[in-house]
Length: 524
Image: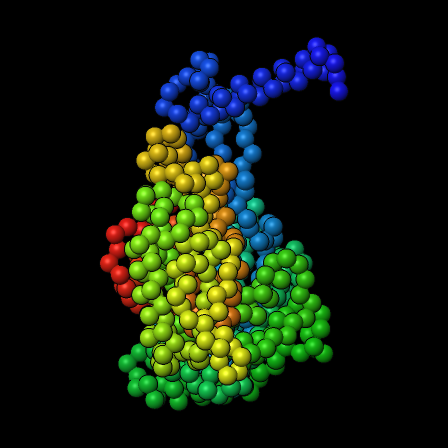
């Protein structure tokens, strides 16, 4: 409402002119020319520091370069769950109850999704290092005074290693905190009291010490654990499997004689979580805080039942055929062909699978992203309503499964990006995991959101087909195959192919089924 020529109006024009000049200079900085469109020298956006691979740089999720106009940039720290605290998770339970399996899953989960330095300290491995591999059931007899003293020494040595690791003064890891897992039976209150006394001087509070007890009364699960894992231990190398199983059953009986489970009456002041029969139910006591809450969420979804997980990239999109990244285009002719062949594969292989790993193939699930190329790839899959009301392969759309967002480069070809922003291409090559597209995402960002779907897949016991994008399938594949988050961006995922994964206690089986000859996959 100011009159023409008023100071307010003049200031507005000046401000607008400055904004336009800055915008022009900023845009021209991504071109090969060293001058802006107005003829003025452009703003320098060339990084003034070399990407460092030092351990300190691991604290950062991205490395915003210094510039002439921003000499002290804001570095976005990578997410970590510990908030600088140190935690100790102590396993409790009889042998063959899945304690080591749970320990390894916790370690991988917190390292992969939360960047938390985590280590497992296994008493069995300490015993083999100290005494050798051969230990029959008599070694674990509580009446054997000689071996009882040796077992106490093993427990102390394992605890010493754990405490030493927690106390390490590491410049790069200390801000991240640490999680130590004490993997042993710890079946008596006397042993658990000693553990508390040993760890109290190291941890910030007693709430940073959490006992995790695995209880299993299902004889089939226990027998399966013994046959699949225990009889092949170094302790039984060269021994007949039947003899090994009998010896291990006797070992369990020795531990039962002195077993004192965690109890709400005797252990009310402790923080603990109990899982029953391979994940059928869970109880907890005095669990508080962000990281313990994440631990509970993981344990609620864990189980030991093998089941097939099928991973597939979407069919070739129009942008794929044009060698452009991102976007939300539909399928090309080749992509349409793959969509039809994929529907046949679902009908003939997934829904009619009678193998031991498929508990109920007719209750199979379908996970897709919210993007057109993922939706269209699954449009020919039938969704039959079963007699119990279940809709087979009902598509569930997850935004968490959308492709890594390319930001300002969305819809461009790799050649165009290299021409217009060569420094960005260089930065991405140097650190593909943490590089963030301008106004877009990094692989670290995507890993953070894909965690939701990974936990869902951990929980399911029926077959699941995931049809998503190259970067997202890489993350899911890396997680279930036990690879590190640093490896995820470099996993080769073929197009027009279904990858079948079958997670088991300590392995993940893998099969590839190529459905259509590929002429080109999704670009990043």
